[in-house]
Amino acid sequence: MRWPDVRMLVVVLALLLASCGGAAVPKDHPRTTDPVIGIAPREKLGDVITADGMTVYVYTKDHPRETVCYDICAMNWPPLLVTHTPSIAGSFPGRFGSVTRTDGAKQLTYNDVPLYVYIEDPPGTDQANGQGVDHEWFVVHP
Image (cartoon, rainbow, N blue to C red):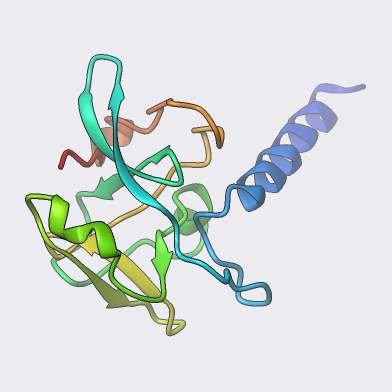
C-alpha cells in the first residue's frame, strides 16, 4: 500500500472511531441519553471532568456562552451535546449550563465555557491527549 493510501485509511478509521465515541450527536442519529458526567484522575493532570469516561476540554478561543468551534474544528473536537443540564451538577463546585450552537444543538458548558472531547482520546481509556494542543485546548478541572 502506498503512503498516501495509508494516510487516507488512518483518517477514515479515526473519523469512524470518533463517530462511535458517543460524545457528539450526529444530526441524523441523535442520542437518546445524555453523556454521563463525572470526575476521574489523569496522570500528571490530577482530577478532570469526564463525559462517558472521556476527558473533557475547553477551547480558549471560545467565549462565555458562545462557541467558535465548527466544521473541521468540531470534527476533531466534538462538542459535548446534551438535552438538559446534568443531574450530577450539584456535586461540582462550578455550574453546568448549555449554549445553543448554530445548528440548534445544545452544547454543555461549565462555568459558561463550552465543553468538548477529543478524537485522539480513544473511548474507554483514561487518556488526555488534547491537553495543551496548539496552546488552545485544556482539560477541565472540577
